[in-house]
Length: 444
Image 1: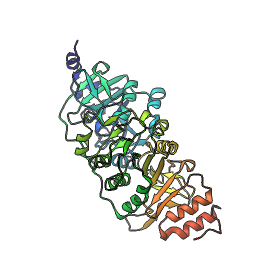
Image 2: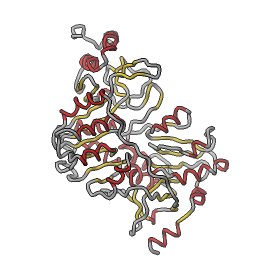
Image 3: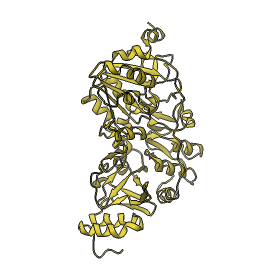
Image 4: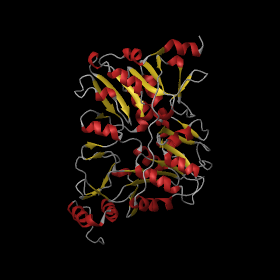
């Protein structure tokens, strides 16, 4: 049987395909714009027939119909590896549970510890050789598909086909069902305009980047703004090795800054695991020989990251305490995002020859009531520690950049107070003194 004949034999409607899901099953939806919209909607229609169906996903932008139709969570229980803004709101409503996970461990978790009864995700149309491309969710896809008892693919005609180093595709012979149907245009996530604080933060980071450096930009407005501002700098021949490829890389490529020519590993190739951004970004990564997508178990491996000389990691966080602990995923006990690959890149960049890892944040924020709050705290009280103090490196606010590596508790406190908003420095000094991490001889 040829691949086209096998495809036709496995073709089902979404309603037919989801009949394979049973009560009590674990179902995986993969990630980001490879969310299987048609299959999710069909599964939601089976709500009253099913109970205790556990669903995993991450960075899904919604709506997730299986969640929306079952506020009691008697039928579908949704869980996320890394919360998007939509999933964060689900957590607030007790409609989503977070799964703690460092992204480099995802493949290991699935291989050794997790059950996947049914895996379903959106993929590109099948090529003439019988392969479907995992597209923008390659970083997580193969490990999930390999573990699944049943694999259902949803063909999304809009997804870019991204070239891969390995594990970027699946053959029709490995698939149980294929569904087709019309999809809306892919969601877009353009870079937000830079604030004055963002520009100040970028000004403190850019001087640390040398020609030929390889860049990792994390999820969030600030790393993308920093990357976009690099496009207007005098830097040249930069490389890409990143968990997530967003529009900042496209801007750097268009500006002639991103060439990958001087990478010390996988030279000439910009490497990523996940992609989402603008329509222009999707067009850029589509069959682009300079961009390859690979599993996060590889892309986020600190040993692989460290093979890139002058590896520069730029991520954002929510808060830092005076001990140097970094929270990038919760506000108190409220889940905001996830651990993702931040700790992976902190570790890998620190291991790199000439490498540096930057964690960025504004020094303060103003809440809905108009009250200003410090992002530098005396100590955490329920906030989730994303990066331990033992792996804190460069912390950057609009007031400067300080390297905490190797610093004692009093040195950290002094440096972090200098990065705080002036309105909070005196009370932070008082707190540090009470916590016995302040030298009375320190200059204020």
